[in-house]
Image (tube, rainbow, N blue to C red; front, side, top):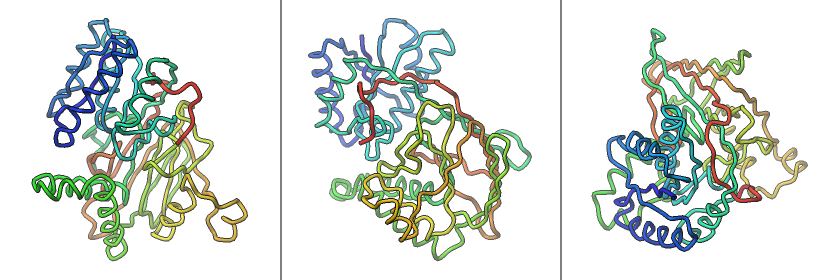
Length: 342
């Protein structure tokens, strides 16, 4: 039996049609689907873990965005830790960036449902490393910890995500606007505004970054991203040699808006420029350090109250000290037989 996890109320009711189609397609593929609806206020993980612990589920499949992926994955991990019952996670992504899916060749959206169900039915599995992040206050007391599956970071990218989330909440109450101003349009608008704010304000910071015991110091940082999947933001590959199951995360430090722009152009997955072209234009691929244990200490300039933080595209607590650990081979996912980014 296969458990389909989704939020039936998401996307102003359109999710219900996707769920119905997914259930029908999974039924045709002999996957014996059972629907499991997500719950509000963070209740999904515990409820789903209890359902998995009944030990009659062969696969869990999520339908939705990064948030639904994270809830399903956390429930699988919780069930395994409590009872030893372990199942793989299949993907029917509907989100905008879809880093987890695209990193393995899984496209998003209703049109991709038949192909993605076929992938799940074939049942090829791969390990995924999982990130654990912990935030500390000024007394070095732990204030929050969580798991992440795609990326975490502080700075401009996290600020853009926070602005996007605020915009989504505002337009969700305006029927006509919410049908037009959504998805990548919302993200692009938030990016432009955050980018301009950073140029005019004092959004840069300094940091001490300790990667597997090696200390690195940076000044003038505008963005810091720690990535677990090959793709970031759906379109960027900072390290083409990165792997999702090698026990290490890639650390990308961007200093200044010129550096941020160069990285956005040079690391784009469809960039047609050759190595020589990049040399001439000053867009050489940056050196990307990797590590299993990463300590980040942030020093904010005067006048900057906090620095935005994110995990998997959702806001995380702002702090001046974080510890990130790679949990090696911590989640089984179902992928195509010949996985590759798309």
